[in-house]
Image 1 (cartoon, rainbow, N blue to C red):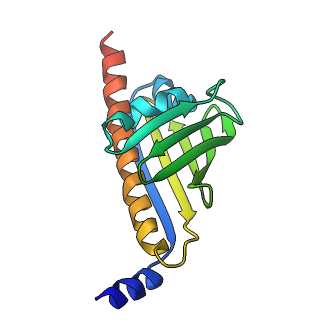
Image 2: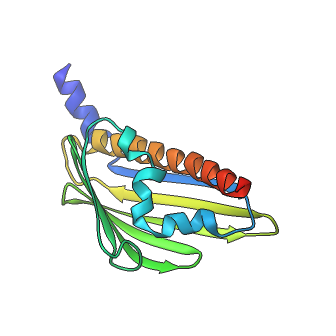
Length: 163
């Protein structure tokens, strides 16, 4: 059974990828602007609700190229750094446990009364034995964070519209 577990771990792909798209009914750039500042990410992605989160540190300044956020978890450490930013685009790098690299891109497309936000995150786990399992876990974990962010942004936009 142990040999099967190890063999399966070696055969699983070591890449992870998350792609989500959400259209929000709003004419204001407010929804995407929330994502341009990393200080908003812990609340948007509901990191306080994740089991195992020990510490969250956001750089000052928290937006613009070079801004970064660190998430310490019982299972590892995640660092997100903004590498490119414009009004409709945010690109960032991911560093997991100081060795596993990834990249992400957020884009915003506005039309008449809608804002479409696209998330794309991908990366590679370099651990040979358990890398496939870690990649599956990363993909699941990152997807849950993106889903939380989308739901919370929809709520924020609706609350903003009622004020």
